[in-house]
Image (cartoon, rainbow, N blue to C red):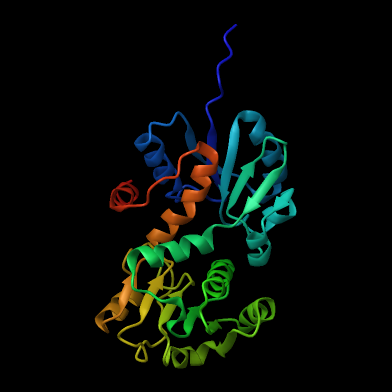
Length: 279
C-alpha cells in the first residue's frame, strides 16, 4: 500500500463566518504558489469549540484562524500562548503542533504595523502622539503594537469609558484616556489616528467624531474595510492626510499563519488585494 502524504488543511473559525474574506485570500495564495492544500470556513458555535478543536488535527488540519466570537475564549483552551497573545488577551491564529499541543498567537498588531509601513512608507512611529478610537479587542492589538514600535503617547476614547480605563490599566502610563464626548480634542498634535471601532462599517452607525483638529501631515487609518474608503478616511483625505484602508491589515495579519501552515511566506501586493476584493 502506498503511503500518501496528507494534504494540509487550514481554515477560519467563527460564528457566523460566511462573510469572511480569509478563504478567498488563502485560496489565492495556495493557487499562486502551487501548494496542495485547502483553506475552508468553519462555522462553529461557542459551545462546540473545545471538542471541534480536538477533532480538527485528526482530520488533517495544521492550523486555523480564529475570529469573532472566539478570539478571547480560545486562550482558555490553547496549550501554549505566545506573549503577545497573552498581552492582548485574544488570539487570531492557532497552530496544531506535531507534539499534539495547540499554540495560540495574535498577528493583528504586526499586521496593523505592516499595513501602515507598506501604504504610508514615510510614517514615523516616534513622530508624535497617536489617537485610538475604540477599546475592544482590535484596539488592544493596535495599542500593544504602537507601544512596541515606539509611539510616545497613545490617546484613547471609547463609547463606554471603563473599557478604555481597562486598557490604560493593562498597558500603562503611555495611554491617556478621554471621554467619548471630548474625543475630538485628542486630535490636537496627533500624527497617527486610528479608528478601531465598527462605526462607519456598512450596516453600522456613522462615525460622528468631528475631525476638524486633524493635522494635514497625519497618517490616518481605519480598521474597517467594508466600505474600503469609509467616511472617516474620506474626511481625513480631504484635509490632506495620508490615509490607509483596513484591507491591508487583514492581508498582512494572515501571512504569518499561512507561512507556518503551508511553508511559504506569501507576498502581500496589489495582485493579492485585487484577488480578495474581486472574490
